[in-house]
Length: 126
Image 1 (tube, one colour):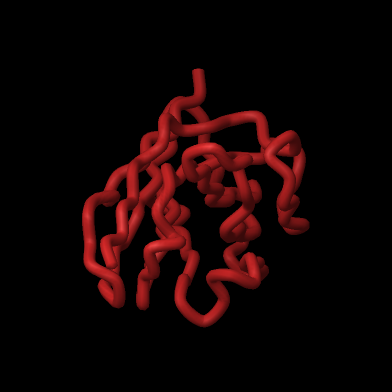
Image 2: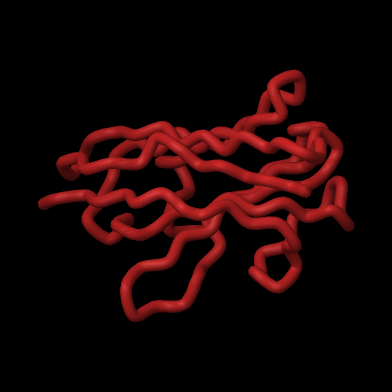
């Protein structure tokens, strides 16, 4: 059974930074696309960033480009999201997701992913 566990969320002031982690167990995603999504209250889940199995291809939502950096450590089966210059609009529950069908092309729709973590809350105060 696949398990994805996020960590690193918290409360931070605007302009601050956080680093999220997503650890996979039960099945390795070291060759597969993995992504971060977020969902704010009353809004749909939206794509934030994704990374190919090799780590050579990354994709970012326009709203986070230049502020967030995605990375992964295959040996640790862990994905990261470094979030800098945080804004109140970044407040949401952040989820990591794994795509067992893709290795390089990063899908941006939640329905393309078959494994999800439980989410970690990120709150940015103004």
